[in-house]
Length: 61
Image (cartoon, rainbow, N blue to C red; front, side):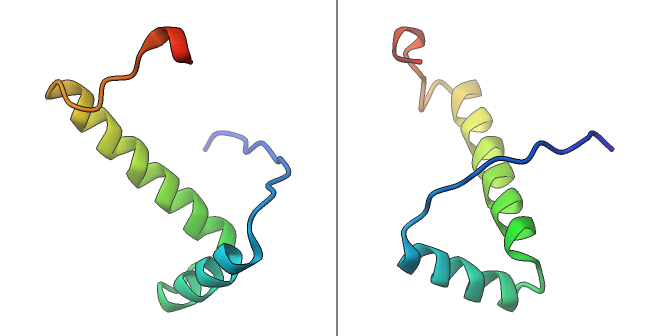
């Protein structure tokens, strides 16, 4: 397993509360829930790129 990198995340308190509740419902830690959601978003983005949708303009990144 790859080593994980720690970083600070500033987040709206209401969003944090919702994520904590969602994580609890899914039997995950808050960190695990955030990693899961980000992973799913990345998978979705890759599918969109392969179908020509959701293309990212290289100049804006």
